[in-house]
Image (cartoon, rainbow, N blue to C red; front, side, top):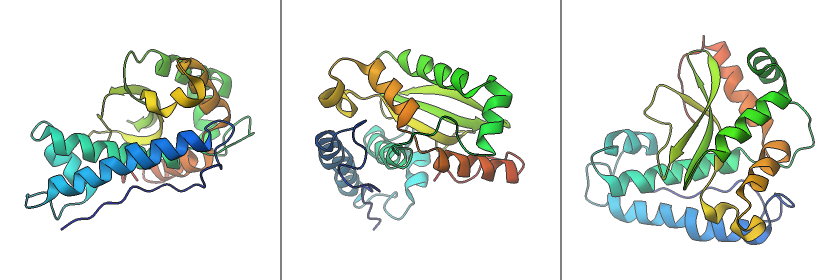
Length: 208
């Protein structure tokens, strides 16, 4: 039987001052780990038990909402933590920087468009930077909806569920979004994904 663990690649205080140790402990310990635990229980004695996380997401989408929601939330949270890193860099590394400038004109315009997209999300969900058809674009997904199983490749994501920011930012989701985009994203991680897509002629590949 498949066993999935919630992964957190940081120390609790490593994302301060963008995200406090209290937020990280609550978000990872209660929510993220909770999805992994519940998914494990739901998979017992099912056809999904020996599948990978991506396979579970694809096969359960539209057929088994409980399994899909927990599998997708596990993937989304795993990916979200990888996207975070305290950074003072004004622009991302190459070749990601050239793609951003070529598409959006400047990193500032890119950051503004990402923030505008994320702020347009009405309720709980996720704001993604994706690679599809040889270019970058922004999309929001509601609730647990995710990227695996679509034609796109996830490059970056911002968690827009209230538990991701309420302890540190209360109702000011826009400030949280701004802080994450300006100083809290792991551009090296994003760059590796984009570089891989460029090297493989922009064909969708592994989401991880």
